[in-house]
Image 1 (tube, rainbow, N blue to C red):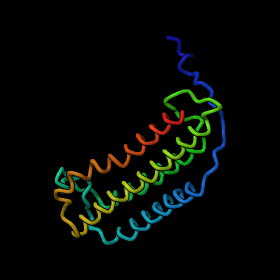
Image 2 (image 1 turned 135 degrees about the horizontal axis):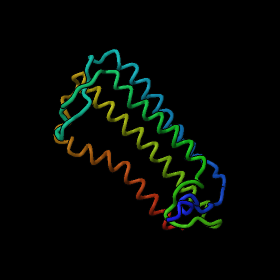
Image 3 (image 1 turned 180 degrees about the horizontal axis):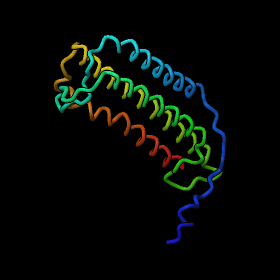
Image 4 (image 1 turned 90 degrees about the vertical axis):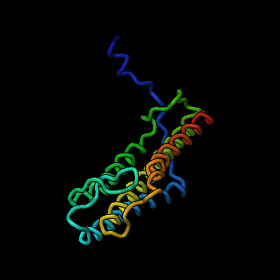
Length: 176
């Protein structure tokens, strides 16, 4: 095997994709959620006990506890992921597409790729926010567990990440 074969990626057209009003609104919602997430975490921090639940079993009952400072991990990770994905979204020509990108299909494919990443950013922030809310509500004793709903919580969290990926990849194939 020749290592040079692995380093050569086919050149894809470089096209600047302008944001629509809907895209601007979604970005504003993402950043508003991040700001709200940080605000909530800072406000709730002083009300929490020293140890908060960090792991839950299949019934939604806390099975492991960590220091309350770990609650800051979720908004931190959310913020870092959003910044990284926002940076990547500015260069859709470096994305890996399921088929060859040409001058004729580049604009549609790049727009769909950008929308997929933007939707995933929104879904990830919502996901981490829901987990944080659940952890803090259990810590405060406002809820004991999700009970029977907990069996649906993990599939729900997975679905809100996987569904947009499937949708946008199907759209990419449709408009290739």
